[in-house]
Length: 319
Ligand code: PMP
Image (cartoon, rainbow, N blue to C red; front, side):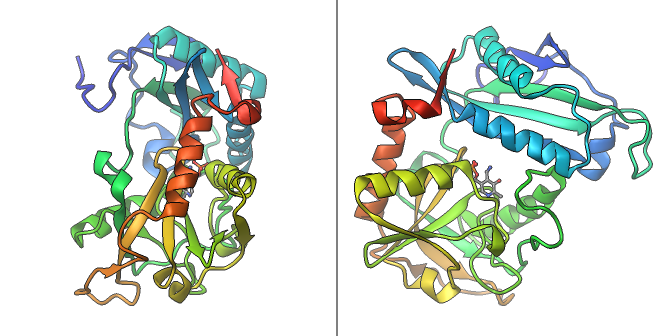
């Protein structure tokens, strides 16, 4: 048996149309994606609602998944409807309600040249119970490190796609931020403005305006981000989309992360290592505690994903 302590409730994994015991599925170590990051993936959440589990924006996630496969020049063996069905089947098969869902397309075993001419594209879908991505305490707010490395530019790789290889940069920055005593990293882009977290979008609130950036700032335009822009406007907040400078971020009244895994997490402090300086103090962001706008948006989001607001039933796929 393999250790599943970081994958609570994972029992069966879907691989190319069949369920396997979580502990049993094996892949060859010469799998192409393992060597070159030649995979694409999605991160999706299902929530427990009064009418059973519901997956948040499943068709939108699968559209992005197939977009990512195209960006990696894959010819995917399964299309949208089949993948949606397989995701719902996997949740059912594992008997989980609130869970994280990870579909992965990857160039598999065949050859090891950079061009995967004999490596077929294969699909795996895993589900497990994954709690707060940055830990339970993150709800009160996290401190971030503005890391020295600049986010990969949109002209270098298609940042609308969730390409496995892009996340090497995320992993390194996440480790560096923690080594510097912060909870998470934030990348600047090549232009020197705020880009995104390793797996999160960044929002700021200034003078009542809820603002985030967009694709041209070298960020993945997250599905949570897009949802929050709509929810914030529905609540009655003014919203804006455009570049966020480092000065805007450091002088914001509030800041927060959004993402499927992280959900909504207040950012309450920052260390600016973006110029490569090793020793830096943490500066307070806003009041140094989760702000009122962030908390209202967070409560609205956590309610709607749990099916508590009929207005957003459109975003839920039920089993
Ligand atoms: N940026 C990056 C780099 C991410 O990996 C993610 C997580 N998918 C996000 C932003 C947030 O996207 P979403 O809200 O679609 O999860």
